[in-house]
Image 1 (cartoon, rainbow, N blue to C red):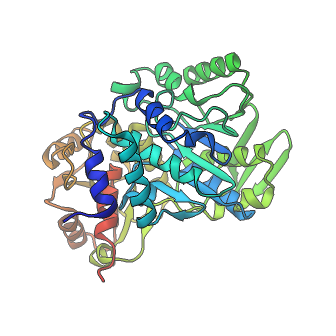
Image 2 (cartoon, rainbow, N blue to C red):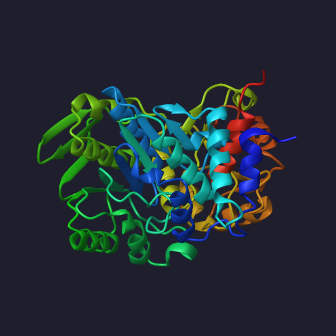
Length: 426
């Protein structure tokens, strides 16, 4: 029988017929019943964007913690277990604390409709409000303007990472429309750090910021970042920093690091904090090299890597990352959801991967069948096949390419399944 937090989370899934229903009315109603925990948070750093939110948050947290700050962090979705979404003063929420806080939110909400993401976000805010810390990092779930995290009246700073096409069904089918939703986190008079943007996205962000009197710290205008001779060079109006390259893999992490540094500088943090932001973050399933566990043992001597990117921009970033890796042949194991642009994600990878083995994502109703994924992969030029599961795919690749790089990719839900499967058995 399911008990504890899992049981309450299962009940919460039944409170609203839709997984996504963008409005803040239900969130405000529950926050009111709980005496508005969103008004009692430590200073908030609110992060929106299409790609790079989690990596940027991880770097900001590492920088703040270097100076001894206690930092709350909220992120979604989780990978292996729900507890990953709520980090209290640097530590993942305990099972006891999670069960207690979820139960209070479920009881306070009663039978009123509310989505799973909304009520669990409120639970995170309640836990943050009741646990002492120096900062609160809030990562937007979807969009920004109507996201359940967008209830803090006066954050310390907001951050908008690169915006691209994703979730068009909910956010609009143009960059300008999506940028309008993301820019909804900008608050009157609150500084906003902006990562690299397409011109049409930047125009929207600048217009919203001007209307609200929010000072912008935008890439290419107020801060610059680049890689030079194996170092990260960051410059803004206060000076230049010569730092180590990000520990997180991929050339796209240079820009995420720049946004994190700009945020830390806006909070008065020093060079040591900026250095720690690059060298100390941990962010799983973002071009992560798995080095131990049952799946790693199964793959050996091949390397096993994991990435959860799932939209066209993530496909381009992943392809650029692979081009920087050693010259080993790369074989992909890919599973995706039916809400994603599969061809757009895969097309950039056709030039860097030897093959793609498609799998269906286990226990996920919105998975694309492996056969369909393989068909799309073939249409963009990838040599493709299918496998019944990740283990079979690994074994098949290893059999004909024992010293390859095996990269499992295409979905955070698949990444979560892999991390659970790769946990060493007790």
